[in-house]
Each structure stands twice: as C-alpha cells, then as structure tokens.
Length: 290
Image (tube, rainbow, N blue to C red; front, top):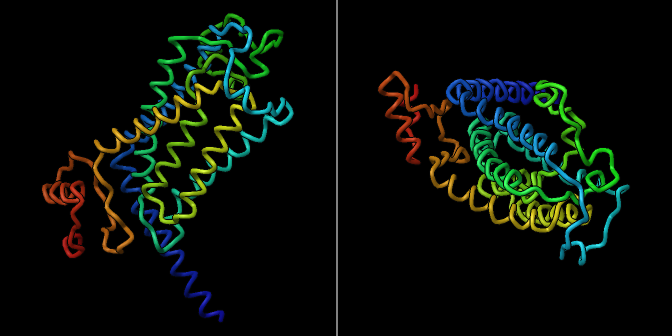
C-alpha cells in the first residue's frame, strides 16, 4: 500500500512539473496578451471609479424588475456577492485543473488569454455606455442622503489612480447600463460551455447565471436593463471574438504536444510550420517534437 501511494505521488508530482514547464513556455510566448488583459482590468476599474465623480443621486427609475422581484434589502445584499464569488473562484480553479488531473482539455495560459480578451472587449463597451449616459444609481449607497452617493473633488491625481481601493470598488456609483458582475459571470459560463467536459456542470452554470441576474436586480444593485444588455452583448462579443481566434487543440486525446507555440514571430522555421498546423486545428506528429 505504501509503495502504491509513493508511486502515485511520484506520478502526480511529475505531472505537475511537466504541466508547469508547458505553461511557463506558453506564458513566455503570450505574456504580452496576459499583461494587456490585466492592465485593462485596472483601466476598467479606473473608469468605473472616475464616473463616480460624475454621479448625481436622484429618484430611482421605474423598473419592471423592481416591480416583479421583491427587494432583498440592504442586509441581504451579500447573497448576490456570495453567488458571484462562488462562480468566480470555481472558474479560476477549473482553469488550473490541468496541473492536477491527468485528463485535460485546455491550456491554462491560452484559456486566460481568451478570457481576458472577452472581458476587455465587453468592458470597453461598458465604459462607453456609462460615460455616455449617467443614471441615478439604484443601490442603497448611491441614493439621495447617502454620503457615498457623491464623491468630493479629488485632492490630487494619485487619489484617482489608486481608485480608493477597496472601498472605491465596492461602493461605486454611476457605472450602469451594463452589469460588471454579469460580464464576468457570462464570460466564465460561455468559456466553460465550450471547453468544459461535464454536461451537468454546464447546465448548473447557466442556472447560476440566471440566479445571479435575478439576485442583482432584487438587491437593487443594477436596473433590469443593465442585466438585459449584459446578456445579449457579452454573448455577441464572445461569439465574434471567438470566431477570430484560432481554435485550441484538444488535449483530451492525449496526443497533443508538450509545447504549444502560438507566437507568429518564432525565429525557427520548423516551429512556425508546426505552429501553423496547430492554429489550423491539425495535429502534429509527436515524433516531430522529439
């Protein structure tokens, strides 16, 4: 028994080391895309914080979702955040499953390149919408009488650039007409829909997305239009960007190579040819990689 555990532990450690080497090589080839995606996450947060300075509280707009869904109340606002945190953490853990499980279909770095591209495109559209029209925020801290509804004029540029983290992120106002939480949720769900392997989890993830939508409206964090716009816009963004990106090779058949160069500027001619085959969905003879 001890010998079996030792042997399996050795295989498990070897699998982690092999996957780590593969992902590091992929990261070296694609670090610019990952970095650009992360930088845009900051830009999106900066824009959401900036529009808070323009926010002017007013009466809550008439909303069909508010009429149909009972208000959860300020003390139960954590419910929607809990659901979102579960979706977020579950997806992050899933993207790193190739390091642990023998059966795998994705490359962690490449999947995150695609996810960050989807997020950046959707968030860019979101920035345009909430700077085009500022609506009175329906959330409790954005209503008239709340000290957080208006931001005083910043004392310096640094105050704006630091986004008053984390309070500035949690208690933002004015970034409406597009739900940020739904952007993340739908991008994650759509990504797992395409690259995930468990049908029951796919169905459950869509159910969670619907529940998340209803909870956001019931918590009065967004108007119903913010949820509706997110649902059709994110789906369209993912659809069109995914068509432009090269299809990922399927690792589930066990014949995928150890390395997956995606850069089009490789110095070695052979590597470029193999890369071209991968980008067109053709498999590469493992013997050629030896």
